[in-house]
Every structure is written in structure tokens, then in C-alpha cells.
Length: 387
Ligand SMILES: NC(=O)c1ccc[n+]([C@@H]2O[C@H](COP(=O)([O-])OP(=O)(O)OC[C@H]3O[C@@H](n4cnc5c(N)ncnc54)[C@H](O)[C@@H]3O)[C@@H](O)[C@H]2O)c1
Image (cartoon, rainbow, N blue to C red; front, side, top):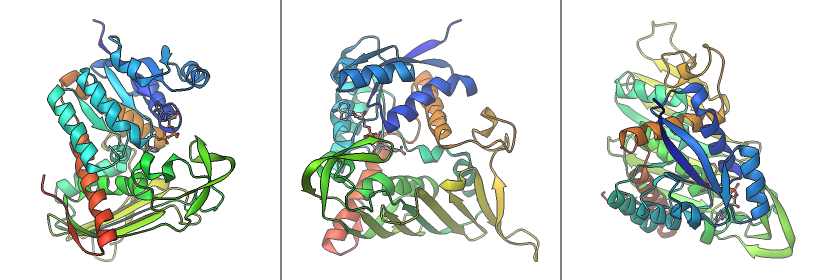
């Protein structure tokens, strides 16, 4: 019998648009889902650009206004891969039209918008997810299993940093990622949001934070993203940078663990250094995105004299998602994290449930982001509102 189709309408077709398109195309190669994704339509504002993207990435049709995607009867799922200031309006309209939704992170510009998005999907009863793709790395999934099964014991510490260096040149333009009205916050919502999601996933809920934020370069030439993390200036005009270049915070978790977090786009030499370490009473794990298939594990139960961090290649069939791909040792990459999330999303739609992380996670994440901003402004500890 033919599988039920999930007809997707995607907004935005550059960096994340490419990652999501690739995931929907490749999903059936690796996972046997109960529903079948159909790349029905994409939306962008520039007709020539959106048409070329639809042809290149294999979408059946295109629209020049995202509202058309939401109105169309032949669309079941709206995939939001456009800048942060568009997320709330598109998601709320999509929910009201009864569409399932996957939205890129951070969920919104601020916690108030995120809460309204959560209320809209709850009210509509649609399936929803947020695209925190690092949760879908096999090594991180395996770390979660080790923690949940008690093999690391009581968790005392999590420390994480997410470091990039692509805006260090003062002539790098003032793209949307550096404008508060479009992105909400800078490095914080872009990179720290991922670390916060991993912290909530692996360690527990964050209860209070003390943070600091800094903007090193205060004016930049105007310009636009040209794909990936590249950009081009649009002339001589300059504008004010009103978001953070770097952020750091310490925190407490609900299980008494302590957290230390740092994110920056001024970490010279670090192209995408997303790393964490978690220490428990019986063991520790370490992970780094640039070696994403590996998990470093220390276990107290190892024989005295042979103790030390070992490197596990999380490519065996026992490791989450890994068995869907290649024989052990045949590594996977960044794009596979999006295939894994697409797999969970399709299963969620098949079973009418919202897999984690979803809009509730997005809202909780946004509460932490906002608390760090408040703490940085007020120079004091800030509690995360109860939810
Ligand atoms: N999960 C991740 O690891 C990850 C990585 C990068 C970006 N993101 C998130 O993905 C989202 C998009 O980022 P990106 O890097 O793909 O940006 P990008 O600049 O590469 O692409 C943005 C796309 O949105 C389109 N767009 C902008 N405004 C629009 C509008 N009003 N209507 C329709 N289309 C519009 C642009 O034309 C472009 O196609 C952001 O929320 C960002 O935070 C997530």
C-alpha cells in the first residue's frame, strides 16, 4: 500500500534551506518511515532565485510569498528556514492553517514571541519541532543514554563552548545575523542557543544564570549574507551593531550540577568549535563537533592502571541512528544530523505527536537566553521563570 504523503512547504533556501532540502531528499535512502516526505514547494522573495533553488534542490514548485505556502491545500508541513524575525509570524499562521511545523532555532526573537508560538501550535494540535540538530549526532545521543542509565553517576559539571571566527574582520558586513531587529541577539541566539539545548537535553533544566555579553566591533559596512557564513558589502554606508559578538554565563541546574558556557564569533582559528564536557561521580564524557563521530569516555570502573579517556567511534549499529547509514567506522557528517531530525519529524507526524525538541523546548531555551541577557545588563544572578 502507498504510504501517506507529507507534502512539505519550505521557507528560505540558503544555508538551512540547503541542509533541510538535502535531508528530505536523502531520508528514504536510510530510514523506512511510515510516511513519505514530498518536496512540494519552496518560498523565497526573489523569483529568479527561488526558481533556481527549486530546480537545483528538487522542489516541485515555488512561491514568492510564504503566505501562499500556508494557504495551499496541498501542503501538510511548513519548514521555516528563514531569519529569526520571520519565525513567529510564519509559525502562528501555519498553525492556524492546521499545518505541521518545523522551525529553525532560535525559536523566536524573544521569550514572549516563543510563548505565543507554543500557544498557537498547542491550540491547533499540530505536530511541531525546533531544529536543534546537534541532539541528533549519534555520539551525543549515546552520551545521553550513558547519563540516563546512570553510568556516569550523579552529574556535577557541564562546561561547553561554541566558538567561531567568521566576523572578526571589521569590514565584515552588518548582515541580518548582526541586527537585533532581525535576529534578536547575536552569537547568543545563534551559537549559545545550541549549547543551552544540549545542556537541557543532557544535564537538566537550568534554574539560574549569571552572564556577560560583549560587542567588540560597534560599526560595520551594510551588506547581506551570500550563503553559508559568507557575506558581501552593499556599498560605503555603515551601521551600528546592536547585538553581542561574545557571551559567557555560569549557571545552576535543577539537579545541583554547575554549568560554565561560552560562545563567541571572535575565537580566532575556531571555525565551528562546538564542544562540551560532562563530569559525573562515576565517569565523564567529552564531545567536539569537529570530530563529531567520536565520544571521549572516562569510566571509574575501568581497571586501575588502565583508566583514562577512551575514544569511541559512535558508528556501530548499537549507537543511535548510526546503523541506518554505513558499516561501522564509515563516518557520517553535519548533513546527517538533519536527516536524523527529518526522520524523527516524519515519525512524529505518522504517530501524531511532537518529538523533542519541539516548541516547548524552544520556549524554555528562549527563557534561558533572555535570563542571560538580563543578567548581563543588570550585573546580577537571574532566575529562570518557572514553566
Ligand atoms: N540548526 C543550525 O545549526 C542552524 C545553522 C544556521 C542557521 N540556523 C537558523 O536557520 C535560520 C536561517 O538561517 P540561514 O543560515 O539559513 O540564513 P541564510 O541567510 O543563509 O538564508 C535565509 C533565507 O531566508 C530567506 N528569507 C529572508 N527573509 C525572508 C522572508 N521574509 N520570506 C521568505 N524568505 C525569507 C532568504 O532569502 C534566504 O533564502 C535562522 O533562524 C538561523 O538561526 C540554524
